[in-house]
Length: 124
Image (cartoon, rainbow, N blue to C red; front, top):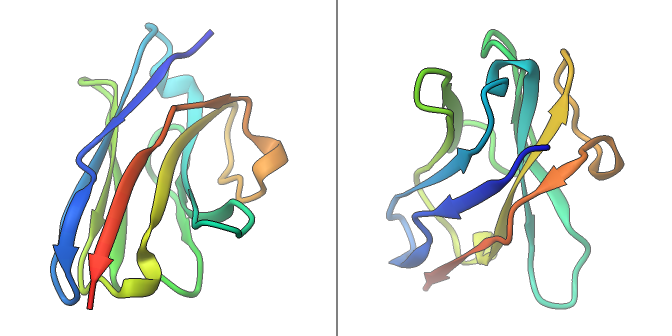
């Protein structure tokens, strides 16, 4: 069982930056691939970024490539999402997710555990 708690959301102007963090409980954090998803009002939850269990591999949605960076600190049981050059269309609730095992999952149904989400609002 893994519990995930996101933090770092807020209000930022277009072109600005935010850093989201996800703190995971449990002593087997390095056994889980991690991901970030987001959901805007009236839209489906969509993939943003993912990282393999040991942090050697990553994947990104085309819409955030070159602007967002996912990373993890295994010693601290955290996964981070650095978001730069933010756009109004990045406005959404951002969710952290975990899946036991290797690889870099990108589909919502591949993840077993979810956080409660943190709101990111980008003003124009």
